[in-house]
Image (cartoon, rainbow, N blue to C red):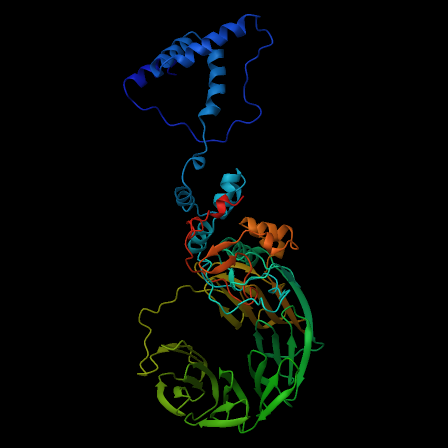
Length: 584
């Protein structure tokens, strides 16, 4: 171990000593000298020593310290070490500029590390409240995809004078997500009939996505609903933002809210319903009775009964809110105007039952038991291309606007160019082969994160899309799984359990209180703590001619989180305003 004199010699040679290790500041247990046995004249002597030391130059002080340390025993040197070591440890973030601190923090990928780091000190907490840090983390974890906010409904704001209306059509001028401008004549106060919206930030967005993904892996809550007292084949399942819609072969269509509570049962078909498609509050259905029916989901009323097919309606899609296209076992496709209930066109060309169809823009592609797939123009009502190559019935079709994929009873999947009719599997090798179920796969859906499959073996399985590994089995094993549908935070499974058709609704939404973010700025914190405080008492940020208050979002409940680069929130505002780090 080098002596203090050796350290002193090293300094004289010009060699730089090792930098001190950053650590927390010394706490209450910091070592202090014991003055209980001090002599009466000791303090007077030390006062002279201190005065002499203060009047000495830098090199003189160094020599005095080196000489004193050479006279110390090991125990005394240990005391010096305990006394000096905490004084040399310094939090680097206290002296570095905000931009450099944020650059350092941007290299941390683990959100748990960031969360723990925010508890080190107020300075660290303020730095980790900066939205750019969490925006970078969103990008690293591939959380850039838009996701609907889970904050409560947007408040209904009423002003004390109708002359001071909020200009909700003005362009948002604030870089803070969720802020909107007021008119130049801002009211002195506002009352909120509902709760204020939560702060919309990258941090809250990341937290929401992180908790949702964790729930998909090992959490979630579920409720169970009996659809029928006896077994029934579920022919179709749709999960929308407002409804869960289930069609069965007993001619009934059941409508539930997204929590699985029954809203109404649509009755009108006289035979099994084999196809349906919702669009907002409107739904179109078709079945064995050869009719296509248009329903109002809010009231349950049948708006139109569209007749023309001469056999079972096997597939249905919506081109837009007013146009539906149906495919039937009578070999034709029909284009319907669901506002008037009139058939706009009949697409003739297939020689056998039309089993499946897909729409993209003005193009509809259909697959048939005649082994052919056809490409049609909706506006022109004619066949543009015939895709020939399968040796048996086509049961499934997909279309992304550029490529058509068809699946057939001949066990092949073919990928086509819809304009040339040429098919190729070049460079289209399987990413993963999943040994998913012990029997037929009855339902399959995927997004950019996961694959959810259901099978006749009575299991619902969740797979990681990137690795192909099984994440979990979602439900308790049952007799069979009819259909599975999911979205970001919800999954619905229709199963056969103990002879009954049962619906299980799984929710992966985190509790709302877990998503709460402490408001960043002083204005937001005061509004959060004292909702009745008049706005005339608030300090506003003036940017141009608009008065902007962050945190009040226009239609905050219906807008999605836009993952655009708003720039670092530590950047100075126009007019020399301080950043939110200095609002406290």
